[in-house]
Image (cartoon, rainbow, N blue to C red; front, side):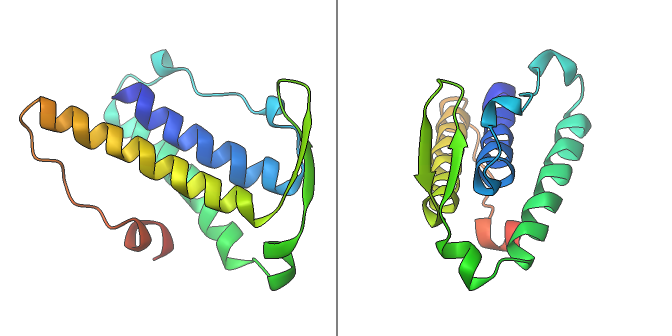
Length: 122
């Protein structure tokens, strides 16, 4: 579960704070799960990424939503995308949250209900 949580945050950071600005995503250092010894460290890392995302959304203009950016992926090719990056990050995060929910169900534990919009946009 830790690896899924960190991957969710890594994806958000990668797509919204690197690719969206045209930065090479291979510059991003993915978090090492072994460096997270407590859940509070995950919470703190989440707070840092969420603060960056809230600042991004607070400052978006109409032009930002429709711009195209070109960035180099780690596999060596480039993509030209715009608003699709935000949509991709959102869909990817939802898919991984679904993974966490399924894992909790398999452990006979009822997952908490967290409204994504309330959590990320308030």
